[in-house]
Image (cartoon, rainbow over all chains, first blue to last red; front, top):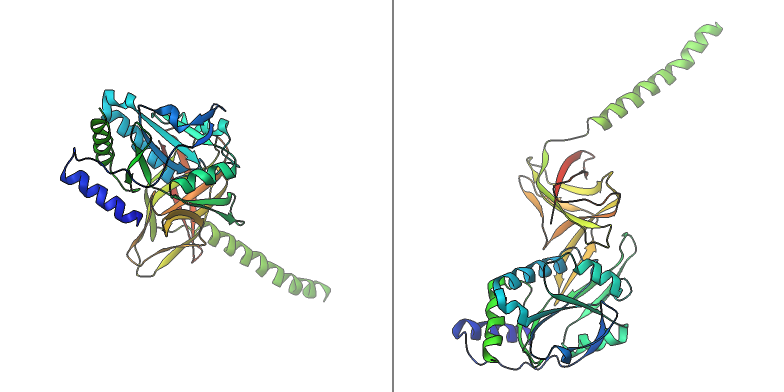
Length: 187
Length: 151
C-alpha cells in the first residue's frame, strides 16, 4: 500500500511539479525529547517544511547515507534551506541518549534535530507514521544487537501534514524537487 | 649401544621440529595473489563511536570459487563480516559467517550490501589515514588489504 503511495506521489511530482500534493494518511503531531534534553513537539516547527526519518546512530550505512544525502539537499536548496528542518528519530533509545545523538549528528552539515524518548513514546511515533523497526539480537557480534528499521523519508508541509514519502533510493534531486513543491504550495 | 638408542629416539623429535618449521613457513607464505582487494575505504566513525564500516571490491582471479571466512586487523579489537539487506520493508544489518567470491568473479562490499565492521578502533581514524586488514579465505590463504579513511 505504502509502496503505491510512493509511486503515485513520484508520478505526480514528475507529471506536474506544482500539482496540489495530497495529504497522506500518516503522521500528525507528536512529542519526544530532543538532543538538548528538551521536550519537543512537532507543532513547534509550524511554518517550516520538515523531513522526518527513523534510524539509530550505530547504523553504519543507511543513516550516514541518508544524512549525507540530506546535507546535499540542504546545499541544493540554498536560501530555502532555512525553511526546512530535518528530524532524526532514534529507534534505539537504549544506546542513543540525547548526548550521543547530539555528538553524532554534529558531524553532518545539515540542520537536523535528533529526537529520542522512552520506548513507548518512540513506538507511538513509529505507529503514527506507519514506520517499523525491530531489535534483532546478534549474540555472536560485538554490536550485541542490531536494529532493523524502515527507511522511508517523510516530507511534511509547514502545517505538519505528511505530503510525500520518499523511498531510501530517492535522489537528492527528487528530494529537492519535492521540498520545493511543498514550499511552493504553501506560500 | 646407549648412544645409538638415544640417537634413534631423537630422530622423531628432529622430524617433528622440521615439520613444525615447514608448517610455520607455510603459514607465513599463505598470502595469496589469486584473490585481491581494491578500492578499499573506511568511513570516518561517528563522533561518539569506536566502530565503523570498511568497503572494498574483492576479486577472484582463479577458476575456483572462494569465500572470505574472517577478517583480522591490528587497528581494532575485532572485525566482522556484515550484510545490509531489505527484509520486507526494513533495512537490517546482520553478521554473516562468510562472503562468497565466484570463480573469475568479485564480491562487492558497499553501503547497500556487505561490509566489514571494525569494532573497538584503537585510535580515532582521520580522513587520509590508512588501515591494514587481512582477509582469510576458505582455503586458508590470506589477502592483505590497505584501506583509506574517508568521510
